Image (cartoon, rainbow, N blue to C red):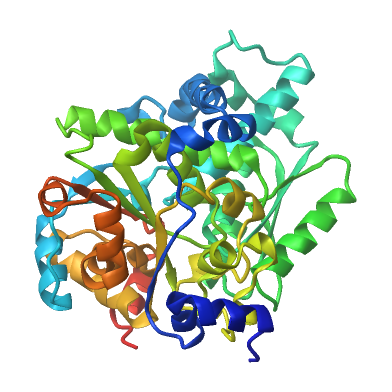
Length: 448
């Protein structure tokens, strides 16, 4: 695959981009990172703190409905939230295997185990569907903010929602979250799935009464066709992973929830005790929203890195080139084909690459073989199962200790040795709970 001229020029000026073209693992450091207060006005114009608070309030209103319909949320009172777990055994094993020192406390944010959809997409995807349902019901005079939202489970409401269609383009997990939630509410649902999507995810959607439309092409084509199909139907609503503010808000709410969990665990985050977070990235919606929410809360005391497969680092390409959604991994001579099906998006979200342009600290890439190695390592050391795509996060703490560019980043941003020893490093597990047992066996036996 030919490398485009703009990519060649970029590589000549940036060794990390040359690594991308050469298909080598690398770290890209964002030299456009700015203090949050410096860009506060611009951020608030696009996604304000009030918008995030409003999203949190909406999820609280829906809690009685979620609790009634999904018994697994009983413990959280109808809130869709995941555990935060210390993983000291994984920390030691990872450090030993990769021959690096991993300072501070390594933790796992287990969105892999979120209720209903079993992935980080349960945050944004379910939030957007719930907001759409609320809007339709209120406009029809069937719901007010003061009502007990548990009534949305009534047959009358399901019949009402049955007039409408919800559509989405997906490589898998977003389709699951949108499909499961929309179908449960009573919507007709179409999920447009790319060639990268796993068969078990398609089968699960079909079992929920969702219409799955398959494409031989990549994620971008599935989104494009889904958007076009939805535009032809006035009763259809398209969840747009590339541009949706509502999806983004659902993910951004995670930051405040994480803050509450850390406070309950008596974990302090400040200048002397920094927070470093690694989130696997596909098109960028989930990591983008998580990054934005965390930066709004912790400002310069949090450092967020995205992690991507060597063959499909679309966000790295979008940020580094400043071409945003016009960047494509094919332009860098890459196939975009990866075992990390949830991260197989050749072009990034234009919305995320713009709004997080001055907020994300950097991006790390890893080879596909490590996805399975890290997955087995986590199971052996912590007895936790997360899908291979999620395991991209573990290259984060490894890369922060390994690369000279990461060391320079730490020096520039005051991450002294002492502060790193006091740091909390969080790997964000993005999916896994719904993986069928026979697929786990397949994953466990995969060695590349």
